[in-house]
Image 1: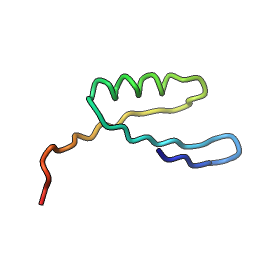
Image 2 (image 1 turned 30 degrees about the vertical axis):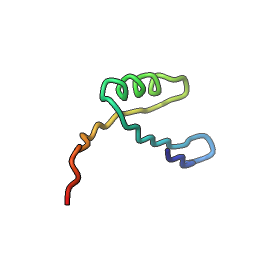
Image 3 (image 1 turned 90 degrees about the horizontal axis):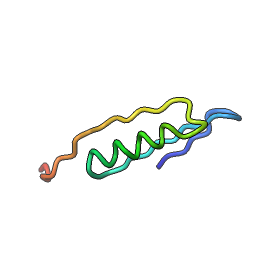
Length: 53
């Protein structure tokens, strides 16, 4: 989790959840729908199960 103050009234929060896609989407939709959240977006990046060498 990353928390950065942008100005006196605004901050930026970045979360990097890992897990089943449907559960992460559910978490994101609830988080984005919270009162006071002005802008939110979920970016999904598939994780490889194999170790690249």
